Image (cartoon, rainbow, N blue to C red):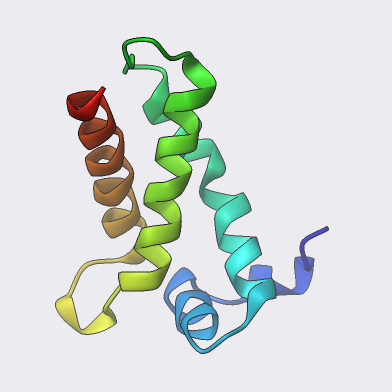
Length: 96
């Protein structure tokens, strides 16, 4: 179960915490952005796969976003995560 006390932090702060090794912050963000990955997955299809495969690719995008987000670039984490989710799903579709 994810710690509800993390609701009080911004996503950017949680990402920083996750990048510094907080597994709890990372799990919280993954759970929070799972719904966005599911929504994005509804509009894509991977040949030979099912909707769960597309969702998994979206979740890989969330994980990559957490690992590579740079607050100094000017984008919010949510915007960056959405781009990473889309990119990961599209790359999976191209590779299928």
